[in-house]
Amino acid sequence: MRKPFIAANWKMHKSVAESIKFVNAIKGKLPDPNKVEVGIAPQAFSLYPMKEAAGEPGLKIIAQNAAAEYSGPYTGELSLRGLHDLGAEYAMLGHIERRRLFGENNAAVNRKVKAALQIGVTPIICTDETMVQKEVNGEIHYVFQQLMSVLHGVSLDQIRRVVISYEPSWAVGVGQHANATLAEEGCRMIRRTIADNYTYEIADKIRILYGGSVNPDNIKEIMSKPDIDGVLIGRASLDVDNFLKMVNYAQKEEAQLTQQETKKKNN
Ligand code: PEP
Image 1: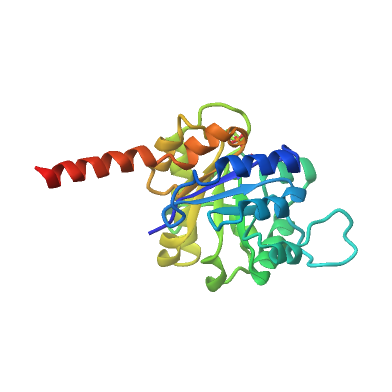
Image 2 (image 1 turned 135 degrees about the vertical axis):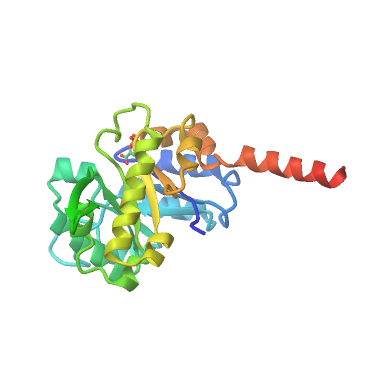
């Protein structure tokens, strides 16, 4: 059973004070951490203050990026060792904006992924690739070249700890309606790619998130898709009410189910 993961990407928004205010506003209102995992990726300077403010294991703190080197003369970079020390469990790596605006390529993301796995920070590998069909021995295969380049050298043992986020460029940051069918198709093909290159057992366990214009109105439909295990949310995650609606997307259904069960028992 893959635990749903709802992750917010705050990009370059919110000061430390605003981030702490947000954490205080959502405290006690998150879903049961045994059922749904919730994380926020704030700007780097808010990671520690947010971790301190959260003070409970219910909220995961995620880095938006990290360097492949643990220490050294890399001015302006963020060390995975430092992130690990402060308790950041996850780091997003290879986000589409890092690739588009800061020229990150597959080789750089691959080094970061391996460094994160080695030090014990779970990479959330973002891939914005569109699938390519290829015929191999008369069979059609879907090839995610970008993803496989980024996973180069990642072992069978390490891949189990990776989270993948499928964020097609047509959907990220554009505010258009996310297309749940296309989102599912992409995630399903990524799972198949992992099965082809690793094993079916691993592909079945690995968590694949979808990112791109997720909001309180579409999250339920997106999360109902069998190969989508969670979402990465940008713009819509900045507002407390929207955030709480999205992380609690399953609550109404659960309450209805419990009511139905109680009714059945009483009849
Ligand atoms: C993102 O940038 O990771 C993202 C998913 O953004 P948005 O939800 O705004 O499309």
